[in-house]
Length: 364
Image (cartoon, rainbow, N blue to C red; front, side):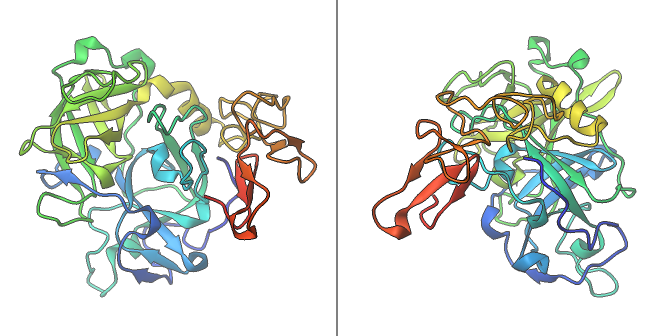
């Protein structure tokens, strides 16, 4: 979802400690952990960043990261779609407001610096734009990838490029060593400190023991995660799976999902599968396409598409397009088959989707 810049008070990032109240916890988006990891020890770990929730109109921030991401250019961060999805609906996706998100660049946001300030506040960057991939399927965790634009360039950490299709993952990578990083809870219950751990590619799709389904081999990569060996878990969602090629180090995966104990298997979204979409966002300074229904499905703004105002709304296609609603309100086309809604009964239980926005007291 693309939206306009809302919070620019701390857009200059490093060296500017904004006047924010620091709150305990991670907020509504809490998610945790790197198990059996070690302290960051390579340049790629510097590019691993933390996602923090702002609240109270942007005047307060939660000290605990709720997800992880990776700096892929000086002002663009890659993360998971489910990290930025604020809808509790089993199918519908609602992107987080950029003004509710801030990015921390460092190793320990809760550390106190020499001036008595939280490290978080000295290395914080505003978010001006974000987008969840338009093909994200939350019920299947497919295309679980999202992208964020910062209000200022990061100069304190070098970005790690996303894996291009020309260097893409294949069956030849099975058995290869990769590296995961994130800010989630460790095996002792601690959290909020960047950790990293090596892993081994198990297969494309969800191809290792314990996988509930085969997954999508074109968009997923999986790995075993044995107890005691370590690996990513909940709050490391959106964090990197670093891939090492002869041409350099790349962000080859985005941590997506795994078993409930984080000791059997894990799955990351394959970054090489989304090269065009990422390049569009990075190279064009954004656009107006994607899940907010204002353009084409490739995130470039485009000239049409079934989800946007540049094309024709299609009732019955399973997508509540920008020009549709559950009951035809606000000069939209009524399409109850695509747009959920309860328009009778108790007022407290009524709601109607207008495009991807839920209106009413009963919104799920």
